[in-house]
Length: 117
Image (cartoon, rainbow, N blue to C red):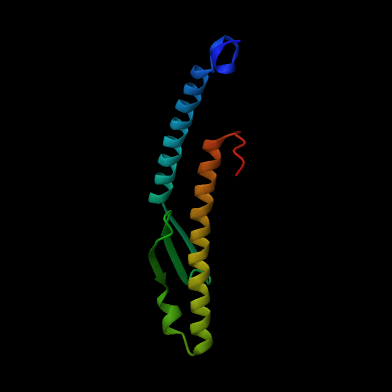
């Protein structure tokens, strides 16, 4: 019987090194794609354009624009609540766009691999 329990005493080391190199390359590409998405800006509007939110891929709110007419015309608690709802909606939609870009970028890199997650 050959040493190591494998025919010819080999454990397929060359194949394993190739797989490790491919995995390292994919990891570098994934990190690069993640960094690119994190640096992009995503915007969304709500309330008929009354509120616009801009976020980056790191989920940081970079800018929030509220149309002056939304503040000037506000007459009571209902208007303030509507403005608050529009702000939340705009921020959440912008965050969703950032998430979608990240998922899309990762899916493209993973290609047809069945990674199990």
